[in-house]
Image (cartoon, each protein chain N blue to C red):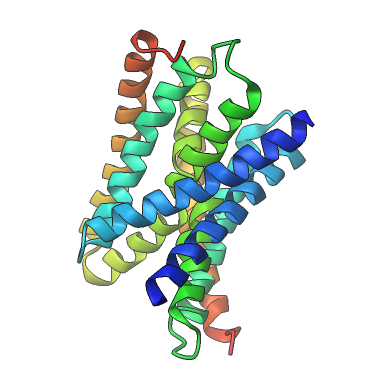
Length: 125
Length: 125
């Protein structure tokens, strides 16, 4: 039962994460790469927060933790679309492609760190 | 109707992508980071293939393309968990953390390129 709840939470979280990323991409028209970049860095902030404020709390059930981190935040951010965008940039300007990769990875690291700082202060319960 | 089908495809694709990534992580016990790395590089291969073999085909409906790329492959790969793993490595060994980031990004780029090469030869229809 415990495992079933976790699987269901990851499935629902993944569905919500995927559609949220898609909505964000639609919200930034003509610049799909910018929507992906925004989803990735904001998702890294959420993950940093969750690692500190959610995963360390014993009172939060495991299926909620997995559904939020592995499911929702994991599915909201993406590596494959970001790499596909890198190739699109490469056909136009290799320098721009490298700046895009650098921004995504370093932006993600920076926002995840910021999320952890916030998570230490703003916990769930 | 067309938009509804696309939204549903992204939701279902995201759910399947999220649970597939979770299953892969469970399949590689004691090394969660390795499961995430495998999901990311194999997902990049799939995305490279899909960009060439699926997205360029006029006969494939748009909702199938979006459900597969934005939904399934997008949700199967993740940026946030990969960045969270980077921070876990950082507390132990910063060199290992940098090698992990380098492997994920360069591995993803290499596998996406390989996927595109395969996609040019092995198309859906």
